[in-house]
Image (cartoon, rainbow, N blue to C red; front, side, top):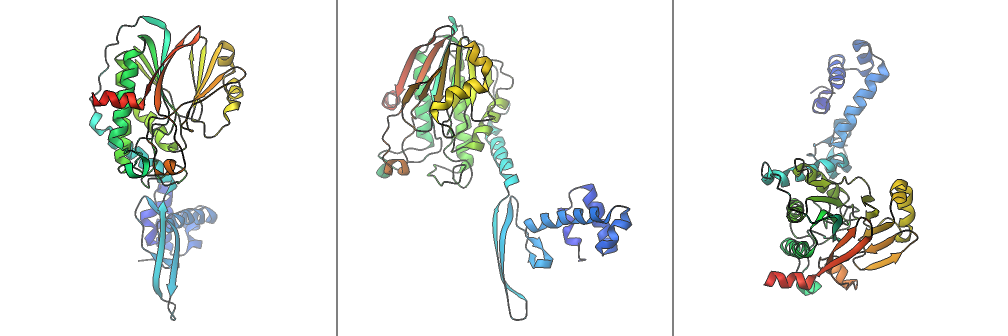
Length: 392
């Protein structure tokens, strides 16, 4: 093999292939530019890019690196042991997942989770409504799909199946008692998924107890959201979905919205709001509702954030609310111009939360807003009521 022939698998553009062909012919880099009629510096930069890409994959013969690592990994570092004759005796290669590949892995998992749904969904006939002025908000605080709890450690067991049954049962009970409003809103306040990758860590790298492999959790979560939306469609002609970005699932929350947007693309009755940043807003007549997970901002600054982000919305509304999650317990405070509320989760405590002393209650709400008067009623389903319904 000539000096540059090892670079062939890493030449990915026509320009790179032309420079590599010339290098193989000339065999000296200083001759490549004149051979192609381009600047010598341009040829050097093109070759350097190919060498860098090869080195990231573990191939750099000049440095005794000859073993390519498989995608989606790249080389994080190497340690080479030489004997007294200067020959390689041993070599240790440390790898890491290529940052550019992480999003593609998430997308692939989403596509896998959608496989069972191709061609299945058909638009449903809208139910009759008796109130055009009401908005029914089904508020989910931190579902943590995929969290695992062992009863001996946490007081009760929790896994994918239990999480699904709890959310479906609670939502079903709330849908039954909610008014036949023309519009519904499903508010996922973030941390819908407990982990954000195949390593079973949060986005920031904290290891968490997970029930199942990541692809299984992702598929279960996407399926559950479809079922919750379909449940709301049986009662309400129009359903809007907000998926907040949590601190556990920065990437997965974006992919969840992408999945739902694709799944309901032919259903005009469903609106999936884009998950683009940490703050989301919905207007209903003279009512404004902001949604954020709550991990990146002080809650007492949310009035100013709404007024700054959405001045027209602020000016057009009289009743302004913020729905937040993250802290897993109930708080409510009235600021200048808005009311900020934090919501509990239905999910069980894992070992870390149990050992840290967290003991908040667990429930879910449907909060009803009138276009003119703001919040007019709310319905609550706590975990015991949901579990009692399952038992019966």
